Amino acid sequence: MTTIESPTAVGSGNAATNKFKGARFTADTSPERLSAIATEALAGLSALIHKYAVTYPEYRVLKQWLIDVGEGGEWPLLLDVFVEHEIEEVNSRNFQGTKGSIEGPYYVPGAPELPAQCTLPMRDEDRAHTALILRGQVTDLDGTGLGGAVIELWHADDEGYYSQFAPHLPEWNLRGTIVTDAEGRYEITTIEPAPYQIPTDGPTGQFIESAGWHPWRPAHLHLRVTSPDKQPIITQLYFAGGDWIDDDVASATKPELLLDPQLDDTGRKVVTYDFALDPA
Ligand code: MBD
Ligand code: FE
Picture (cartoon, rainbow, N blue to C red):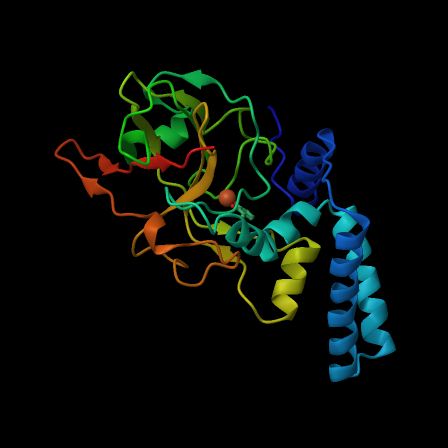
């Protein structure tokens, strides 16, 4: 008999942290800009400490919690849930094409390459759920098809788990790198993901519970769409009428990103979504 480890907050958190640490990032921020941003950040913190007369016990609990966030590997989760949507917003202001959304902590580059018409890698138990067919075209802003454009798609399974961040799933489950045909068209078969719950057994989930908030994201597909000389799009697609659509803990839904799949006569759900890419 084989034992299957069940997913834990510390497991997915540290997997996300270790993946992020693998790439060392730099930014060309000047000392003046760094000083200005840091000064205002500290001023904001000072103001709320005075406003609420934050106590020593509260200060020590905060310090302990921040240590726990690091030890649980939850900095990617915490930041992407509560901060990334603001970064995405200010950095996509001038784009006219398909709306972006946050990347989140669970993107992994290098998923298996698949042809324009394909099925994502999945287990038999995934395949038992209703098939979802996502099809459409990748174009420039004038509607010209971009043949050979690349769509990276990754999403949770019917239990809300992502491969490589839950120990029981095959490495590339529900992840793929799809290359569009000569007209930029694609047709991907997958399944609908479940809504995502922030793990309740880690510091981010404990904080959310302590504040009386809810830990849910609506069901979503993550996509990264790229083509030479075009602005890459990182976005998410959601399901109209689904739970948490209007109350995403990560504040990352947009009305332009809603899908409304329809059942066809073979019992599969089908939906069309086109991507328009801004020039680079
Ligand atoms: C997710 O699946 C996600 O997309 C984000 C942004 C944060 C946590 C989990
Ligand atoms: Fe996600």
